[in-house]
Image (tube, rainbow, N blue to C red; front, side, top):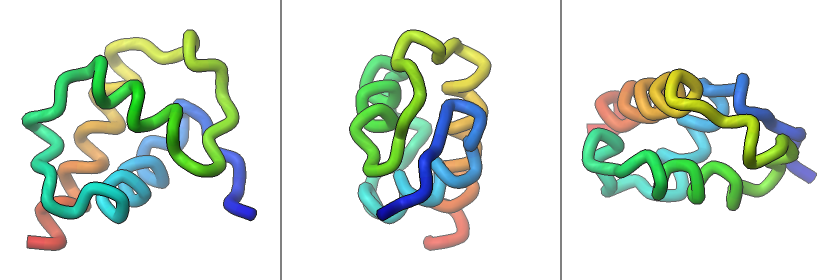
Length: 71
């Protein structure tokens, strides 16, 4: 079973999103879609309503770092 992750685990979320969507440039993803992708991750256990713009930005940047490293 995957470890439980929350909105504060931006780096782990970024890794998981890169694994799930390897060909998707994170900078092209709308925050509404990013929010949905995160809450659908295996192991995500936080309240969907606890996200905010700064948390989504941190996740997007962590995902982007993983995306750049994979290119």
